[in-house]
Each structure stands twice: as C-alpha cells, then as structure tokens.
Image (cartoon, rainbow, N blue to C red; front, side, top):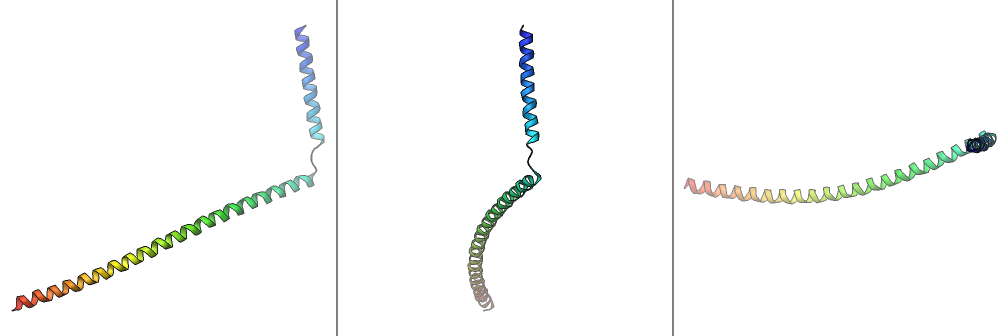
Length: 105
C-alpha cells in the first residue's frame, strides 16, 4: 500500500511541475518587452558607471590638491634651504679671504 501512495504522490508532483513549466513557457514575454528590459538594464549600468566615474574623479581631484599642497610646501622648504646655503657659502668665502689675508702677512 505504501508504494502505491508514494507512486501517486510522485505522479501528482510531476503533473503539477509539468503544468507549471508549461504555463511559464506559454507566458513568455514578447520580444519588445525583452528589448525594453535590456534597455532599462543598460541604462541602469550606464548610470552606475557614471556614478563610479564621478566618484573616481572626485578622489583624483582631492589627491591632486594634496599633491599640490605638498609640492608647494617642499618648494618653500627648498627655497629656504637654498637661501641658508647661499648665506653659509658667503660666510665661508669671507672666512677664506680673512685666512688668505692673514697667511699673506
């Protein structure tokens, strides 16, 4: 008796499954609907790419500002160091002159 119940249950399940698959196949969307869905998806992806690109541009812009700030600071430091070096060179030249003048006497 159990094998008969299992067989009936299996047949009912397969029958319902077959009807569901058949109904889905009969209700396939029209080609225009598929094309519209594809266009909507591509529009979504285009918007997604545009958003990502704008964020990348924003990050690059901030990095550029930081690089400019560091470069400006470094240029100011280098100019200050060059001025100090020029002062040291002039003092060294004066010391050499005094030493040469003292040695010649």
